[in-house]
Amino acid sequence: MNDPVISFPDSVGRPGDSCVMVIFGATGDLTHRKLLPALYNLAKARLLSSNFALIGAAVDELGSDAFRERMIAAIKSYAQDEMAQDVVDWFGQRIHYVSGDFRDAGFYKKLSELCDQVKADHNIDNNHFYYLATAPSFFGEIVRQLGQSGLAEEDSSSWRRVIIEKPFGHDLESARLLNTEIKKVLRERQIYRIDHYLGKETVQNILVFRFANSIFEPIWNRRYIDHVQITAAETVGVETRGGYYDHAGALRDMVPNHLFQLLSLITMEPPVSFEADTVRDEQTKVIRAVQVPTPEDVLSKMARGQYGDGVIDGETVPDYRKEANVDVDSKTETFIAMKLMIDNWRWADVPFYLRTGKRLAARKTEIVIQFRRAPLVLFRNTAIDQLRTNRLVLHLQPNEGISLQFGAKVPGPVMKLGTVNMDFNYQDNFGSTPDTGYERLFLDCMSGDQTLFQRADMVESGWNLIQPILDVWKALPPRTFPNYPSGSWGPVEADELLERDGHQWENDF
Image (cartoon, rainbow, N blue to C red; front, side, top):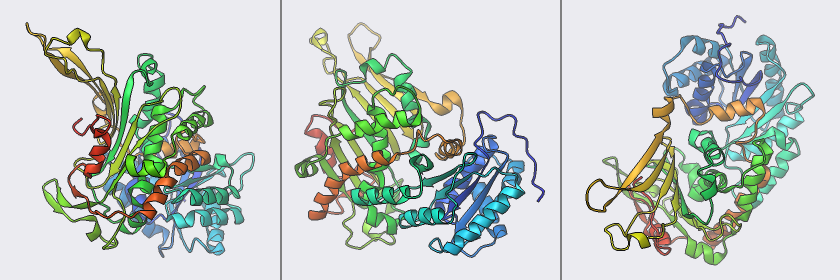
């Protein structure tokens, strides 16, 4: 095979290892919208090895040519940058396809033969990484079949790695069972439990922001911080995911992975190094320090909701129960808010408020650090005795950046205070880089860096906090759903959760 040639000397970093990537479930929406554009972005940035190939695997009866055309079309549709035709041509020649039943041992024999052929054709080292973009029910089965077929076997000069999409289990027991099942085949160093939120620049910058800036770390504790808010809000509904979402809900879909990952990075102790297991040791430690909710906590410190009809961006949208593949009497929550406490020296008595939901008033993911109020004796007889407290906001999406809010005197003869915002925006300062959230995670997997991937003990620690909520909600189904209109900030119970503590959600930053 004569491959198009592109030059790879001017990469902006170390390219990933030479390898074959296999995507199980390759004809799905995730592959088209996110995975292929991310691989293209890496290739364009010269961060894919020049000895790389992709094999798509799915049940659809397709040939490699037809699959290749679909993938190139996906790149052209969803990539966020101007097309580089030489990269598209190079990439297109390295796309292959195999169809079959993931439960059939014969399929893995075909896959193994295709891997050997592709490695020979493209002069690729004997390294494989497998991406499980399938329904969660296939995770354990695919790993078991990879083991039985020999496709998971490593030696001293080669590696095998498996990326597993969320959700990793649907409760504590299933997460433990899945960990047990895949560890019969794979070592922990081969398992990459992916969370694309961790590929975002601001999330990665949390550790740099905290531990590389001496002005922030000394005040990153209970003496100076009053409370923390973590919000992951979406304006979209369930779209085409009704069948999955109606069984998962907002709690399972977002909290044990996305929100707990953010919580751990904000609250973890300084690691002794940035080696993967050292960082993940500290993340797991702080998640274990979170108070496990009692049944009383679930009733008083948690709020759930389901969206009704309403208006988003000037358009009328239907309620959740009218979405495709959703039960007409569904009790599934599309919104969850909670108050958590951490039992350690750094964070004792500091409340952490987490919320996530669909069909909310704005699309944004952010972390708000609310500092304690300064002593106001000095300003008692002035017009600024209601001085607003300092606030630090980490914006994760859609516009990644950091904002710091503080008070300053307004010029003039009267003592009058104004609020000042110091804003840092990634695009303004460093320029725009095409990004799906998966580029860094793919590169880390191809390089063997697990820092941004969840370890088994962290997954189980997260589910240990979620399980009491699931148990109470199962015993006490909601009676008021739908209880918030689309286009709002969720049910009134979420506002009351903070108001009882004298706080309110930060919606306008």
